[in-house]
Image (cartoon, rainbow, N blue to C red; front, side, top):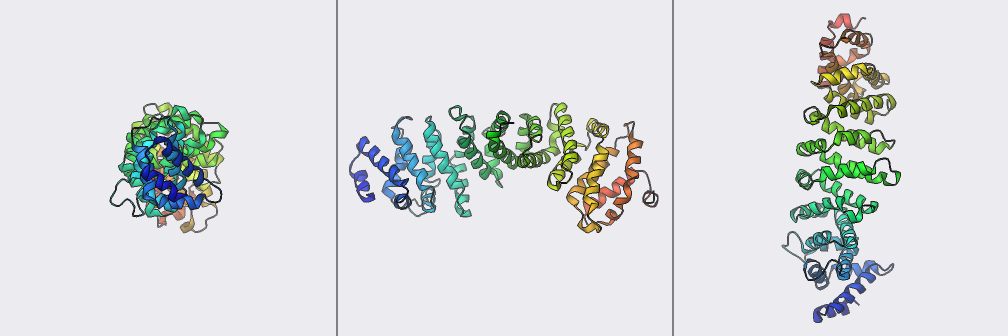
Length: 420
């Protein structure tokens, strides 16, 4: 059959004949039994591949022409298999020296179609390329998509009004962005330039509290987490009401969303004081973080992130320091330290990930001479400080420095402080 179809492709340029050829291939490639074999043969056929690429990159056909859906669908079908992915990326020797490959350019053209069905099958093929288990092939896919300008068209799908309720499609788009952004600064900047942070935050906001779309929020928050390690993306996330939206996210019961958004907030927290234009949102965030210290006291990963955010927010921010003290924040921080030390007789096995930000936050809170109740708070810490004794000699230099700083802020010498 493949040989016959190749013959028709090579000898007949009639559009109806070509459409029928592509339709037969599409049907055969999704056949339950013979589909994998057909896809392998198509992947190894320069004649068929060149026809598919030509159809998708020619401006001869209108968006609603069924041949575009069928041609893209054939690429999607072969992208389910390693040989097909290699062929599309030009890694099988059939498209030597082409960068980006004709296959990638064809899929990017399909992503720009006004036909939703074409876009859906195209993004599925792109997703398959990015999920290849061979890391070198996955890396080639990332580089080619960026080099060919494909990332901006992937980002634009988040605003595709024709697919606004197709949640499965949106999850695939978001997962593509997550793979592209993870560990790749160049791709993060491309996502930023394409308006990614704003569209991601809009996606989260529009789907908050809706159980059927929880996976959508979870995947979008993972993309934000990857972007939030980039200084330029941090600013964009905050400018686009990211603190307000992420604060709403950490009020959800879904622990995966909670953990991911707390990590994102921790990444953002070193610039929030200088970037967030409305301090009301910071107060709401701090209030929720203190609630988390209380409600998730036995969840180290969650507590660690919450403390990291608090440690950064309390640095050189007098209103926030007072807000935390008035909210009983000192007691909550001491409680987190108690739990971290509770099961650790030897300081070498205590949870330093919790202790360091907690002690740093205490230092910041005590460093506010204008606070009226400061002496009361000092006394509260003094009365509980015996538990800190061993931490003066911890091998963790940052933690040891924080403990000694706290001792000096308490206004006592070591011998008096540890014998209260």
